[in-house]
Image (cartoon, rainbow, N blue to C red):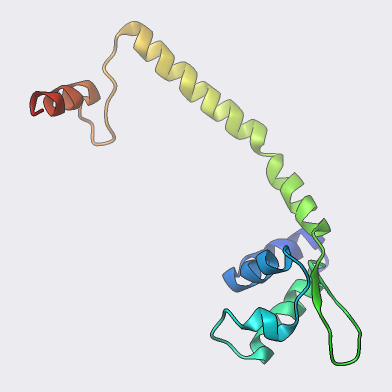
Length: 130
């Protein structure tokens, strides 16, 4: 995968790999330590680590048999930046919704529940039962 951002998102798509990254955020760990909370073999965890290494999210030590994995969060920064680019879209969308709801309130229009009922009437009915 030539695109580093695609490699990052592909690696993050698997919940086991996300859990491994979460564990590594607390410090380096061996394959055995990473495999402990999962019902999987060391070989399966090693495959997940290779995917994470390929995406640049994990580095492995080269100390004989002891090859601890370490988190390298730099690719996550690029993913966060990409996602963060949509923050303005959400701010604008939620701002427009807020403006619309405020305008409805100013007009005294009843607000409807998702099922089409009048929310104010529903609340009043609930209060009558108290």
